[in-house]
Length: 497
Image (cartoon, rainbow, N blue to C red; front, side, top):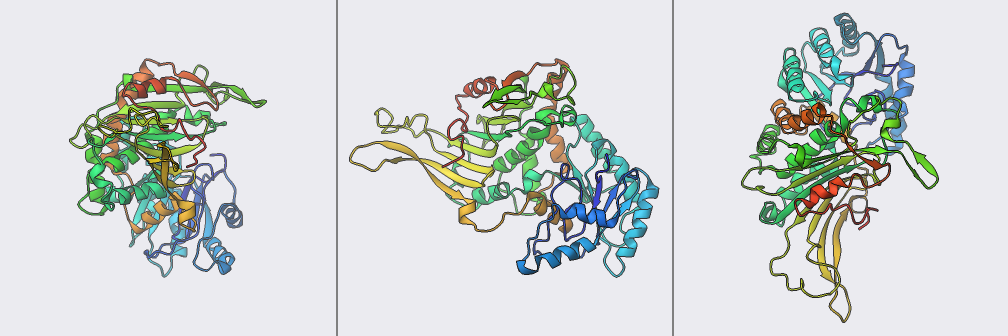
């Protein structure tokens, strides 16, 4: 791994001391009750050289402080860094983990030896690490847990094999499959918005919702990471996990309780009710080089780490359907891409038109036939919830306009929003599985996407090229038009209300 940390063993005081490019930023604790946890360490490939002080310096570059009294923030950070140490060794040998176990026991003296391993490692060595760590570095009297980063396989077959291999050494409750999007504030608020507000719950069905859009876009390309990205593509990287998880939370029935298993049971029911994707319901694209404002932006194929002739999509749009009583016939449109014109992640709920609309036939401003009510949950950037309604423009005449009832988090809540990884890491320490992915949930998710992924790759379907910094392939607009839908992010690209 070129000297970058590959496996983190974390303390309850902080997040991983791993490479910023492959793991979440380190943070200080939130004030929440949790069990005692053993000191922090980082395990790294033996060919890399580093001592405890160098490790501390590396961690401190991204370490932030979030405590009740900020005046002693520096002292708290120093206390945390003193509890971090570096242990070299090979991650696929039991001898290396046995040495780590010995070092940890020295640090754990007088404490309950609970251990959490974060597998920020290449997927092909997940099982080697788990086998070695579980056999020789598990806690003797406390709990031992493993956080596993995506990708969880490439398709149904490889994902199932990974799950079976991990379960040779771990129980399901020891495995925390992390998808950081589930820890984002607006995703967490999704179920609260729906289940604790009477105004929304009766509308949450095919009777009132015309379509649901899940949109993810980045305004940058692979930027030298094409070698990794080319093995997976945008569908595996974003749609099969991040966006599908949000969809399941959005569409699930009311769970029996807020218990992790009750929530995950409802998510699995949604995923099992979804039709497997077909090729005609998918549009794929790949960004090409473009010059704008005197600056040249390279195409995906121009990245020297990308194989020649690659047809890996950097953009995809798909129409998905849930065949159950609540959502029958409602298109869930999903769109994700790199090197687009803006950076955003949002859920857009477009409601049906008002039947017998009194204002439909009069030329009074906004076309109300297309300007239907829309609920938008912006996950990033600038977290917000807003509801678009039709209202009269003040004045003597009768002219209507679209207005936004908005909750902009930065204005309403004058506090720092915790990083998604911060929430998820603390949940893992506390043994809370609610925001982590269960094995049967993973199986159901792959069953939706595996058929179309195989067809795309077996037939080497050529992606539609789109310029770097554009809105993406034209085909995505035709896909939405097939269901009498217009992408909601076409207007208001600046994200303003």
